[in-house]
Image (cartoon, rainbow, N blue to C red; front, top):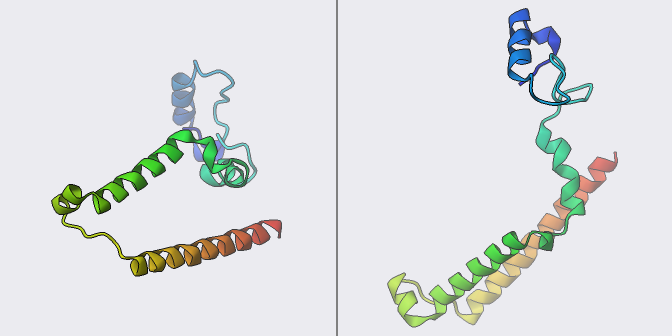
Length: 122
């Protein structure tokens, strides 16, 4: 990994040049991040994608979520599986608690997204 030249000794630059000689467009001694100040790569590369990429564009993710939910329902409501896992199905009253908890959590998450969006405008 390359660092700014001010942090590298002569031996490190030579070692970097030897290791990275076959990498196209590599500039020995330069920062791998082409910014004036250092920022973690996740904040640079992933942050805009949260607002741009829709969740259903990753079908593997959607499929795994649906499969997980189906397995939970099977384990809860198919009698042999519920006995095997020692669980009991939720009543309607318990499902309403789950539903309203989910709604309040979703509202809280939307509030956080709104706050982060406003902060990024500043």
